[in-house]
Length: 446
Image (cartoon, rainbow, N blue to C red):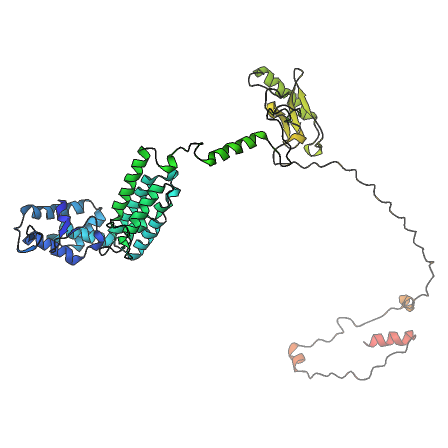
C-alpha cells in the first residue's frame, strides 16, 4: 500500500510523499493519481521514457482506496470530518487525503527551516559527556530529517552537510577531526570540492560515516577522550604528581613548611596539637558505641538543668565557658553563637565556632543617674492695692422702668410691608460724661 505514496515522474525520478512532503503540490498529486488509474509511464532498459504506458494494475486501484481509508482511520473524528468535507467521496484516495492533511497540520515554512538550521549549527560535540559522537549524530540526524521534510524544492539548503558537521569540528580526537574536515571540504558549495577529489555526500550519510569511525576508535580503545594517558609519555601527569606532592607538603606562602605527620596541627576542639578535630586522639572524641542509651538520657537531663541556670543568651559573653561533665569527662560545651550545648566530637566553646552565623553579644549597661533638677525661686507676690469703686456700683438702688407688653402697639404684616422706610434718626443728645442722671434719662429714651 505504500507504493501509492511513491510518485514516479516522467523523467524517471521518484518522490516519496512520506519523506519529502514539502515538495508536494496539488498538480503533482492529481497527475500521479491519473497515472495510477490510466497506466504508469514505461521506461526501456536504458531508462528512456517510452511512448506507451504500462497497463493499469488492479492492485494500484485497490491501494488507492485502502490508503485513503488508512489515512482517515488515523485521524481524529473532527479531523476526519474536515477531510471528508474537503475531498469528495470519489476522490478520497490515499495521496489526495494525505496532501490535504499536510496542508492543515504541517505546512512547510521558510522561517521554520531557518530555525532548524540554527539549532543544527548550535550543536557542539564538547557539550556531550566524553565527546560521545553517537549521541551527537543522533540529535543532528533528527534535525536534518525535519529540515528535509520541509523542503519545497530539491537541495533548498546546498550546504546542509557542512552545517550538520559543524559541531564535530571541536573534537579533540585528531583523526576524527581530520575526517570531519575532509567531508566538509568535499561538500563545500563554493567550488573547492576538487581539493581532495572526494564526491559530495548527503548530511545523513556524512553523519553515519563519522559515527562508524567513532565506533571503530572506541572498540580499539583509541578514541582520544576515552584513551588513558600514561604518565611516562606526557609531562602533564608529572606536573600533576609534583603538584600533589607540593600540596601534601603543606608549604605556606611564607615558605614555612610543616611536617606531614600532623604533629604541629592544632585541634580546634580540644586545643591540643598532633591531631585534628574528630580524631580518636582528641579529648572530646566520643565514639558511637561509648555511651549507652541511659548515658545519653542522663547527659540530656544535665544539659536541661544547666540551661535553666544560664543567663539570657544575649548576656553571655564570648569568653564564657559553660560545659557539662559526665563520668569525669567533658561531654558537651556551650557555644554562644550556636545557642546550645554541642555534644560529641563537634563540642566547642564560642571562640571555636566555625560557622558563618554570629550572635551579637549585648552587655548589660548601668543607666546613668538622672541630672538634678534646678530649684526655681518662689514667685514674688505683688501687694494688693484697692481700686476705686466703679460708677456702676451707684446703680444698685436705681429702678429702671420700661414699657409693658400690653402697651406695645402691634401692626399687621400688610401694614408693615406698605410702610415707607424712614432711615433718619433725628438729633440725638448724648449725655455728658460723669453725669449719671443724664445717662439714665438717655437710656430710658431708647
